[in-house]
Length: 327
Image 1: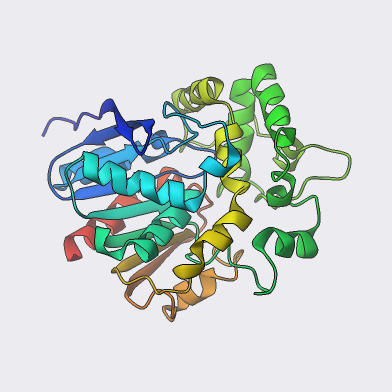
Image 2: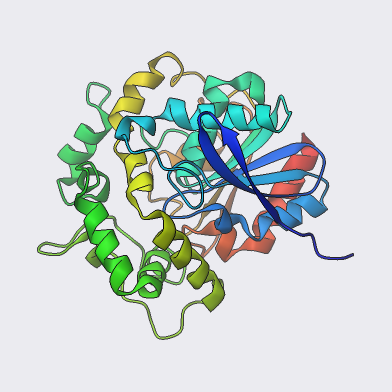
């Protein structure tokens, strides 16, 4: 069988230009990347799922890659992000899709399933549970909760001030784009030391990421690193950082649906290196999550880090294919 070709095009979606990578025909599967990533994080999944009989679409979400990046912070709310996806489905001529997300993309996938259950045939979260952004103290906003628990040095709190982290990332990108990507990817991987998200005293956000050994782990080759670097040199980091600046706004906007259970059949995958790092993972790992009552399965990949679909593509592809065929 010849290899599946990934094609690219740009669509007008919800008032912005959205770049998508796609392959295959059949039921629609949307693959949503996280931060700091682009559609390219799904490079192993797009052809594999297309070969299994699906129309696979991996967009650069707003603010990332070759899609538009609106200037205003309040144009990156969860309403914008989920509306982008329903508009994308409309543009593709589809009423429903299986939505698969990683990292921030998982949060968008879970929220889409709650907000528009009629559009989601199935939902898959990788590396981020459905209630990651809900504060432990229900009387506090998410950012206030993180600030009280972890202080100003916690990365999400640090990201709140527009222009600050943006400038640090921009300077690092200009100085050594390949080195920056290697640090970002290595730190949270199964090969790295684990990323705490805490900025060291007297340092910058870049110092929170570990130095990379001479040989980068084999799950990302030099071309992969160059591809990411080129994408971030074009887009910068501000669009992605603006997603974080809407946590509190999202909390308010989602009041009417955030407590609703995910009605669609669901799957959760997480790397063993971070399986117990987020308390909300535990309900999904135990299979007893009241907010995801139709959870079919949770898969923990031992030794794997945050970049699960890139670190363990064959295992992830097999689990995703099995889930899709069960729907």
